[in-house]
Image (tube, rainbow, N blue to C red):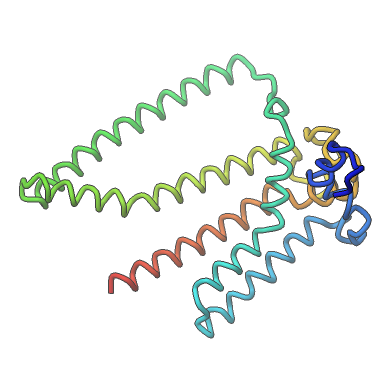
Length: 233
């Protein structure tokens, strides 16, 4: 950094807008105009690499790298868009009928979830007591083992819910079109780099984001199960 450069300008160089301005003129025109198509093609190329990966039995870490690279453009674009958009841009007027129906559906779902959790808790407690032969230490050990084994499943489930939620946010903010004419994204978003803004908004498509992220999640889950199975054997 130049000693004479103001602190504000130095900080601006390393913000999202600063990086976008530096690469604004380097994006190919076709990429800017067909960002969503390029995103699908990018994901398809990396997914097709799983064919030789499976045929030649590549190491699991290579599978992880392929899955990460397949999702990287749309994931990065989505994080950029959502991080630069205030939550207030998602708000919309709600009818009285929609308000009370959503509350009713929420209470019904909460009651069903509570009932299922009570039944499962009682069933698991009885099973643990039977397996532990009423020995407290043995039962505690079995319970902790069950907790450790179920934690990855719960984390993956919550991660999938988060992906669906983010995809829904994107559909609210920019719609489902490849090149939306009107969005709820702030007008100041990369205003100094309009071509980069079009590229990022095109890549942050709810369908592309959800499909590629779910694919990467499934691949990661299968690899985890395979590793666990191998270690047990």
